[in-house]
Length: 343
Image (cartoon, rainbow, N blue to C red):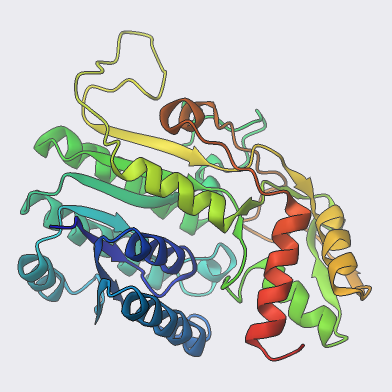
């Protein structure tokens, strides 16, 4: 029998790509998503259509169920019916800026919903829980690159606070119930089928529509842009590498790979921060259009730089991101023009 893997947020950007890869590798994939209207629902449905197409093409096994992870009874019923052995939890209320407008949605999805996922793991024989954390947990840390053992108790947005809370909640469940859990701190993921609320999609749409783009902190920002295929490859390699309880943390030893319970957090990033203006220049060159730039001050909840230390994951899965930013942006622009019929 093929492995059964439950993926929450299956219609989301990262969830879609991971589901597609799992289907192609002949896993039984159970995808759930609530298809909320935080951004264009038609894009989410198009992703699901593509997943069904891929599954039918190779005679794969993909089930999709509309489910809100805050609904503990429905979530439990799905897991009881399909009996997955591993869970990749990507469903969440995303976005730093939106957390200033609708904080309740973050409490509901990222805390209550994640609590339901942990309870589902406790009540079932889940061999490995992988869940989405975020580089935002590093807050305004000045030490770079950001390493998993760094101090992360000063979140600068509610979104970041919920992701840090997820890591603490997962650790406690791993400690109490020996649930192997891996929290993945994603660093600015980009690529085809991306989210409309993220910079690459926003800038591309505006530039092609001859509308101005807002550049915060007057362009003095850098991001560790990580291409989606590199992220997907990393997650796929992590699935069969659950943390083990044998690695006992020694006194005064803060190495992240050592823990008194089967729980870890891990960076997935490109280890190469790019200045925002350089990023825009790469996009302009690919589009063949110059952007009309409006420079503004830093927004609340944002940080100036993200920069991933990836030594831990490199040693664990023997893989490092390999997609140059110029190539990744080219792939995205090709997809964007094709998807929105702009060729």
